[in-house]
Length: 253
Image (cartoon, rainbow, N blue to C red; front, side, top):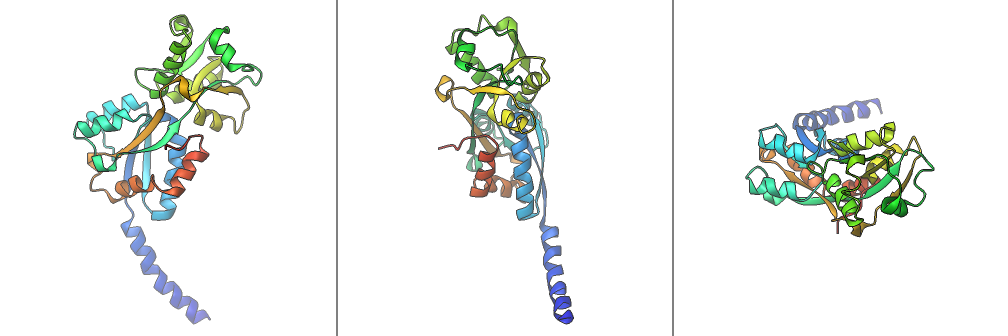
């Protein structure tokens, strides 16, 4: 038995060495709202392939600017569908890898468990001393928040009350810290926060704003990177989609 065990180990070592030798690294730019999910995807992907993906998070608008300026990213996981397609048009991304990977949802949320009782009434006519949203000029979720307030006729009236985050992560932090008592923030971030601290919220009806379709694309820099291309393929897989759903996103039809 000992002989067989040693023989098996000897046969296995070259296989493991080969797998390690083939493992590659890649860098992905990811929208701030998706960072937690991306990290979970990266761990699962590494367990399956050995490849490692390093994630850098910012607003989609800022990531677009960084990529255009030559930032060393191999992939983009955006919070909208327009930015990856714009990069394809600009010759900075691979058209055949473009795909939608998640559908985001927006929530009116407070860290106070009793503050949001009737979310619709509060948004329509309630007193809102400060409201945190991501900057609509930089972040798709901020654009969606603006659409909601415009639909309700409160965008102009609430201008003095708005607290703008550079990205949705910062917008969420303003609410979580109490700097703003209310926020229009991603359901995914609310779900993450409420794992340890309860709050109160109301999910915005999907037809109150344009769908927040999130798309991914392999960038020109990652064209010949096996890890980047493999991760792009992995995002379309059933295991990856299951992780996306677990983190508070809807499936893209």
